[in-house]
Image (cartoon, rainbow, N blue to C red; front, top):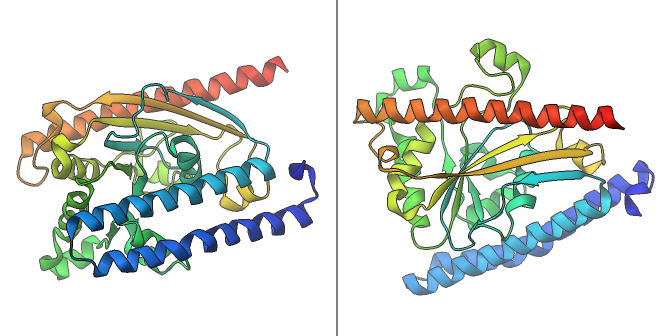
Length: 304
């Protein structure tokens, strides 16, 4: 098996194949994206958007196959029954590592509509990937510090407008909008600084999810509440490529969309209070779910 090849051979080979796979998929992706930009006919643009998604799903599928060849990961995934390829989902997930993204892609590729993430504006400059994310209509968000907003109040609300604009594009084809509600990756230092009431999570931010719910409203079918656990602790992308990630636990819970989850986060204080309370409840239940997933792993270890 390739997974047993010594690291000094396996890691460069894995990285080379991942790079080649990216090049092979990004090239047609960019060609179609440029054609899409130049075509004014909406129906043709929608067909090109579907073709772009098909290329992206193929790219992810090959990456998944490569990780399967080069790594030995024990996957435990629960809650995938009943998911729809033609549905529209808001996906809420805890965030521990950049490995979360290939994990989510592995779990959901071709099971639900293509996942799109809200990305920091600076990530558009990432070689190859930045162009691919742009071609696939990933929304890029330019975040402003509190100090910047105080100096330039005219920038207030720019992110929210960008969120609504991005979500309007998603109304014309099946989509899954991904939101890491904690806003940053979990670390014990961040947990302590926040005085987080959760054992395994940071405090969630309700604004991003609320804006997606408001912008897409009745176009969404459900919320997918995803909990990821790495029993051995936080890991990096290099850990994944090097085969040092051995256990991944994923739990998916489909939550219904109810009318009280739709409203104006900016203009309706009562709604803002409801969505924050709802998110806090989701995160309490998610923290308890993460605890059960860790406990299950410890029992498994003890039995060996």
